[in-house]
Every structure is written in structure tokens, then in C-alpha cells.
Image (cartoon, rainbow, N blue to C red; front, side):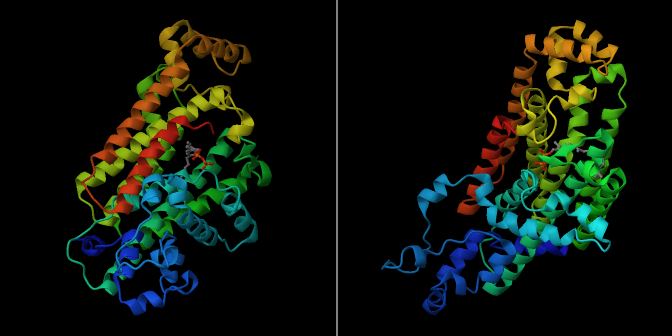
Length: 420
Ligand code: GRG
């Protein structure tokens, strides 16, 4: 068995909730020494892990009860905002990413860091999902090892899980840089795309550089199964992009082809990252498959809504050009559904979307059809499959685990209701 799997199986506490509980159950002397959060010996952990810890002896200084674990129940119940739940940890991941993408050559350095600068980090959807999944899959065993040993294992595990978030984000940004070169895009995340600002060559090289930094971090995890999953996701990104750019007329009108391409381009990275988290955590194959199913269906729902927003959003809300797909000759779900209702639309598409008259006609058909509505319905179906995967996870009564699972479910709702 992989040593880290063994370690993580032993780990009773892989969550901040549990670290908090342990701390609280320790001696009064221990508690006194924590009278200020700034002096807390947990601080190094929090710095590295970025998890939120509730200090009951601060929020309830006059409590006469013994050292029982105290949780703000209302906030436990209410606080399922997925992004706030991992906000602290996300900023640690973001800082680490900034230091990971520093290059030797100044020009490459400024190109590589371009989309990691504060304010242009995007929605950080992938690291959010990955960190929530990491907590949602925490393993508990009934008999704890010694406190220090467990803390060490849980810290190590959390760092490894954070690495998956970092690797995934580097690969994602690399793919955006290359995508913008291929599409000749001039904006991304509301600013000039890197190819627009620094030229195609540097944008391609910066993407390659991010990919190589991701590989170095991946290798450091020393887990060949995880290496294989992430490498497959990279292969899928390239396959999906190639499928998109070289379609026959038949393939362009096929929903199956579109969904396969969508899985490769958008869902594979997040699904394989979620599965990697499960494997690093020492979960069973069944649980790893549920994590994968969650990522796959969430990714599909995400892209289906992206395809809707490409028609319904504005350039400023999207941070990139609106109607970009159809202007690039890319046929997505809304048009495919419209084609089912109006078969003559296929002839328009086959005549070529490089002609603005055909684009306008296609848009007219789309407006008359239920294409947008049906695409939203398909996205909702995948979102509910993602949600069902979380509901099928083995029971776990740890508050933090439950809260993260609720946040993952909440994300499925946000994905289908998002407007940008
Ligand atoms: C170099 C790994 C690598 C791949 C090259 C170009 C290419 C092959 C693949 C393109 C893959 C791609 C760009 C897919 C689109 C995925 C997608 C939905 C991007 C937008 O994601 P958001 O909305 O972006 O999460 P932000 O900006 O919020 O991070």
C-alpha cells in the first residue's frame, strides 16, 4: 500500500474542525496559553493550511462549562458559502502559486505570473472544489494515534491535497493561455489576454512553463496513480481542443460528439483532480469514483452554462467577448438543440459560420427555439447527478465534513444559476 494512503487511513483528524476539538480537549494550561489567537501555537498550522478554526475560549470567555467542544451551531448550519469556507486556504494556495510560477528569465517570469496576480485570478472554481472535496472526504478512525503524530499526518496530507489544487490551477491557466493564442483572443478575465499584451510566442512559452511547474509539483507527490490521472486530464484538454478545431459537418451537428469534447475540455481536469484527492486521502475505489462523478457532472454543468452565457452574457460580465463561440464557428448545445427543432438550421451551419449572415440567421433560429432552455435543463440534470454523488458518500458525522459536503452541493446550484 502506498505509504501516504496508510498514513491518511491512520489519520483520525484531517480536518480543521478536529484539530480545533483536540486543542480544546487538551489541558487547561494549554488553553491558557491560547488566550490570544495571535499567540496560538496552532498558528503555523493555520498559516500552512489556511483552515478556519473557532476559538471557543475567545468567543465565550465566561463560559463555566468544562472544556467541551463548542461550535457556533448557527454558523455551522448557515455557513455553506463554498467560497468563504475555503477563503483563507485559497489565499494561501494563491500565494504559493505566485511563488511557484517565478521564472529565471524576467520576461518569462512576468508572462507566467500574469494571471496569478491579485485581482485577476479568475473565479478560482477549481481550487475551491478541490479543497472542499479534500475536507468532504476526510477519513476518521475510531482510535487516535498520539496527538502530535496525527497532527503531523494531517498537516502533510492537507499540504498534498493543496498541491492538487495548485497543480490543477496551473494546468488550467496554461490551457487558457494556449486557448487564447489558438482563438486569437484579445481579452481574458476582464484584461488583455497574454497573447494580446506580450505576443503569441511568449504566451505559448508561458503556458509550457506553467505546465512544467505543474509536473514538478505532481512528481513531488510520488503517487503514480495521481500522476496518471492528471496526465490523462492534460491529454484530454489537448484532445478536446483538437476535436473542437477539426470537426466534420457530421460531428459538428452531433450532441454526442459535443458532450465528449466538453468532457475532455472542461470536465476531465476537475473530475480527475477530485479523484486524485480521494486517492491521496486513502479512500476506497468506490469513493474515488464518486468524487470523480461529482467533478465530471459539475464540470459538464459548468460548461453547458458557459455555452449558454456565451449567447446571453455581455462582454463585461464575461470578461471576454460575447458570442465568441458562434463567431469562431463553434457549435454548442443551444444551437444543437435549436437544430433538433428546426432541422433547416443545420443547412445554415453547414454553409459556414464564417459568414456573418449565417451567424445572424443561426441566432434568429436560436431565439425562436428552446435551445437555451434545454441546455439549462441538461446542465441542471448534470448538477443533480453531481449532487447525488455527494449524497452517496459514506456517512460521516464530522461537522466539517458535513459542511464541506453541503458546500459542494451548494456549488452545483451556483454553477447552474451563475451569470458570469
Ligand atoms: C497547455 C494544458 C494545455 C492544454 C492545451 C488549448 C488547450 C490545449 C486546451 C484548451 C482547454 C480550455 C481553455 C478549455 C476551456 C475550459 C473553460 C471552461 C475555461 C474557463 O474556465 P473558468 O470560467 O475561467 O473557470 P476562470 O478565468 O474563472 O479561471
